[in-house]
Image (cartoon, rainbow, N blue to C red):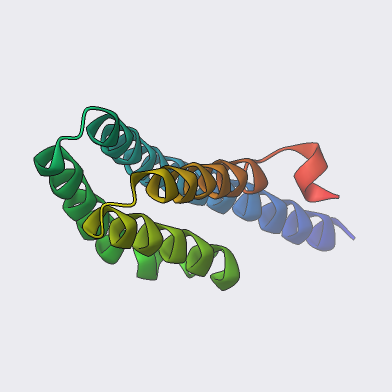
Length: 127
């Protein structure tokens, strides 16, 4: 009986540790992307195409580098939504549809915040 309790305790502790590690990774990547999205928004508001393009490139670099790692534990549909809206922002900036770019940017930021909340270690997320 003691062996079973020990095994269960080790498994639970392992799950909690992995959850903490993945949560920190998710938060750091999503915070970086969100920060660059905010800078893109600033660029749109002041009509600085250089700032918009520079930050979109940084977002793409970060996303391409971290997407495979995130896909190990974040639902693929959610990652695809983020990528789709980031592409939508970039496309709208290229064709100078700044109002649509802001809408896509806000939606992308909302989805990113949702992902961060969903993968936090909280009681509501466990049950």
